[in-house]
Length: 177
Image (cartoon, rainbow, N blue to C red; front, side):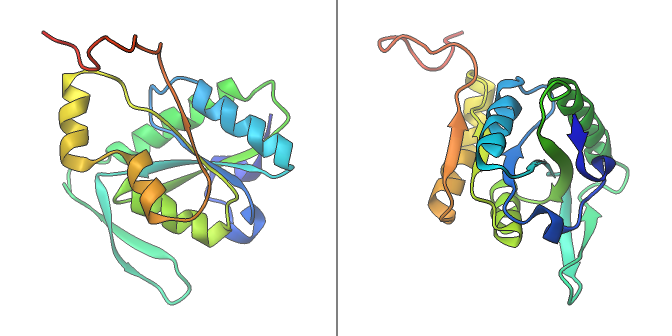
């Protein structure tokens, strides 16, 4: 494992041209391993991004540094999730020779990833599919699919890594309970 900046937010100029892997806690390792594979093929570092949806950007400094505020003042769930993502990625990439770092973004996942990809001029964004089930379908109905929203709102190639076993063509997509 070679980790850029020890898991702390790296300077964007050092990450110019890096592959982005959007990771959430408890996501199967396949997303980060696929992203690492493409980063190795392209000879660029890997940036693992986690988006804290419990915070939002209040304003940006002239140099582009964002200032954020929590939606709920008593919650700091994003820091815990980032630590979990960093630990999991370190385990998964421990035997790979890819340079990587983690960066936490805030706000709407699709927009945050899009803006960060523009900032570092990422050649590829890698995301995973969501779990199947009624709860996930309801969430996606109200918030939309991050992959679908990214594919319509930016120009970079997007790799959507299927997670879980594929379902039969005739089977219902959603659990019928």
